[in-house]
Length: 122
Image 1 (cartoon, rainbow, N blue to C red):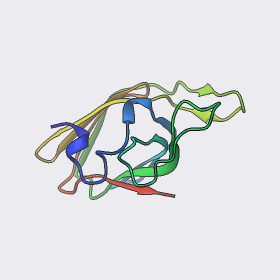
Image 2 (cartoon, rainbow, N blue to C red):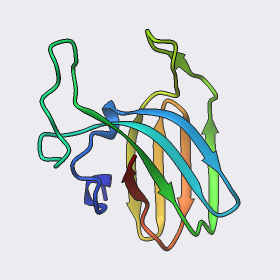
Image 3 (tube, helix red, strand yellow):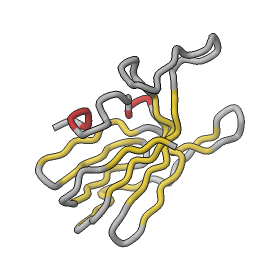
Image 4 (cartoon, one colour):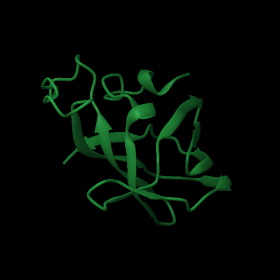
């Protein structure tokens, strides 16, 4: 199943969003994001004349992780025009049962957890 079926994820475009930081503990994983919002998102406002998207800062978090495997992990990053670092996009986030698989510029990650990931805005 696709990430758009996870509560609160239907109104963001992960493929166009940027990973700004990854924080890991033994049983959790947090992706600090600049999220691209769809026009259905309650936080959406039309982008300005020099903007391509409406964005909002937020976190994607996995909790109560029972297993995690970075199948491939790249530590590549880029800097935008203002000098801020980002680790690229999340090209896909799918799940089946309690297994979540994420592909993106940062590599491939498999996470097992009984809880769905959360998306919160800052």
